[in-house]
Amino acid sequence: MLKKLIRRKQQTISTNLYDRKKLAQQEQLPNHIAIIMDGNGRWAKKRALPRIAGHHEGMMTVKKITRFANEVGIKALTLYAFSTENWKRPKLEVEFLMRLPEEFLGTYLPELIEQNVQVKMMGNLDSLPAHTKKAVVNAMEKTAANDGLILNFALNYGSRDEIVQAVQQIACEVKNGTRSADTISEELLNDYLMTKGLPEPDLLIRTSGEVRLSNFMLWQLAYTELWFTDTLWPDFDEACLMEAIESYQKRNRRYGGLKGEEVK
Ligand code: IPE
Ligand code: IPE
Ligand code: MG
View 1 (cartoon, helix red, strand yellow):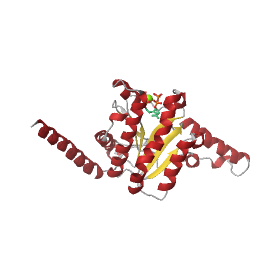
View 2 (cartoon, helix red, strand yellow):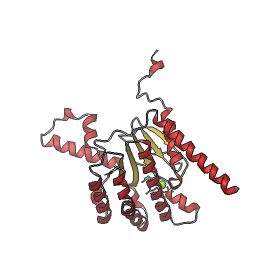
View 3 (tube, rainbow, N blue to C red):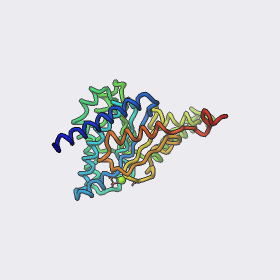
View 4 (tube, helix red, strand yellow):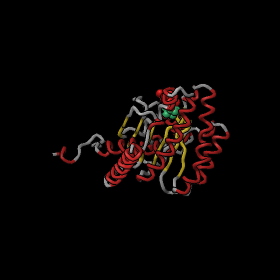
């Protein structure tokens, strides 16, 4: 009896999610969703587990959310996996985090290929451990021709570092005479950032109750809609993503101007 009730409840939840997905697909979806996946450590602490157990569980959430974002029809998903500041963490935690891309791609790459997902990475690739770099480069190569969801990992990424690198490159061109200073524009800077070719995020999600950007996509988020949740990343699921998308679809994006009725 109880089992039957539980099954019925589960069926209602999934039908509900299916209906919500269909409804959302009839409206303007965010093209690009960026997520600051936070709260793995606290998730583990709540269960008296080591922090790395939280990171492992967080990786399972990455799989779940990638599948669902693809199913919904999101074009690009950027996931903040490791910041330039995260090197400050204990050595063992950093080592574990640097093993996760291999584990994730080792088990999941065939499915990503089959689902036409294109894996990308932004961040300083060269200072990653060789084994991490190898796994990421292999995934990027094997999925380069795919044209479905872009799964963009921010790994060893810092937005200030990204902007400084872009400015250095442009400054070099000005110095050696291949560019004049008056050709420097917002579009040009966009082309020197690690997000070159990607649309700006329409929706930014941060989990775990923190309400800050932690050096993430400072330039690109200028007009992005922000959505924060107390849910810890390992607990984040399809329904949470749906909630964020639904909230996005109710927003009025003005970009500093006025819209529709407001003009009158
Ligand atoms: C996010 O979870 C994952 C990374 C930053 C790598 P945290 O490890 O920051 O988890 P909390 O914030 O300590 O709970
Ligand atoms: C941001 O989370 C980085 C990632 C999610 C990879 P942090 O947990 O490092 O951010 P702070 O330290 O709380 O700002
Ligand atoms: Mg954190």
